[in-house]
Image (cartoon, rainbow, N blue to C red; front, side, top):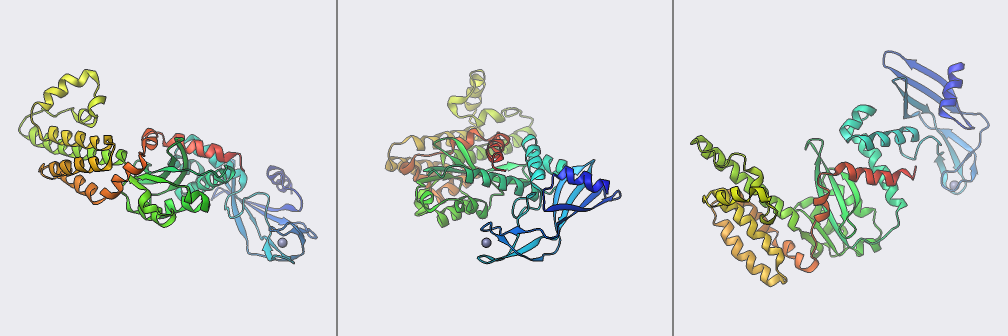
Length: 391
Ligand SMILES: [Zn+2]
């Protein structure tokens, strides 16, 4: 009897709900708390709030609650259903959980606290929940945060994918490029990941989207075309993502050339990786001398670097026609370079050229997500903190 009292107090249950039994399983290190409602209790319809007669009880449902003394704790109840004259037979709402959740509100708050302090993988270990459950808690928190926000139109969006959990998982980020804020974060980088964002928008918000900067990634393209009116013409494969592909290609050229030189006992390229990744004006002063000497050597890597640097000029043109002329020269040069990684990226860009040149209509780039590149933690926190107010 006494543990029933204790648990009732821990849960701060209000009438008509009460604890009926508490079962502790030392083997499984788990506590099952059986709940019930008082007889003669009256309930309200979850839709309209009017008092409605009890109809029946549905099979037992459980919610994960906060651990007690290291024991996983579950609340269980056969939920009553009411018959509302207006809404028919409905399951009643419960004060300890949000609709549709398999966790109690107390557990969700705790989980959010934990997830704010660690990454998702760490959170799953500390909380004893799966990756998907952790994501679900976060996504629902973020969705509540979004609903609480004012429904403003965001004209220029940036969509980006980020690797998390040591590259085993991806998330999709949607940024407001003008305000440099993160608007949405979703599990994975599939079409459904981005669909979920667009579906959260009103017709007016969808129609207000003027341009969407993104990588050449088909699921994001498909989602944008499906949801944004005239989406095709609003997609911009942006400078940031294209240059990322170029930089990776230069790095591949460097790697294979270094391997070949190294085999001949030539260490010219050793320790030069980061020098080739800089754009010309960002090269640190202290490395300029060394870099100039390297460039004078007529290396394949030097040629790849020059091709990459020349592509950057594309976005400096004021008119699409001039940019297109630059592109044609550049494309010929890149595809005749006999540097396979460069040829490959050049062809990929060529295949998407229409939506690269939409830049000259919209002039956007994913600079926001570039800045946020290493800050996935901060992003998540911003969103979840804004969501915290709503439970
Ligand atoms: Zn009703």
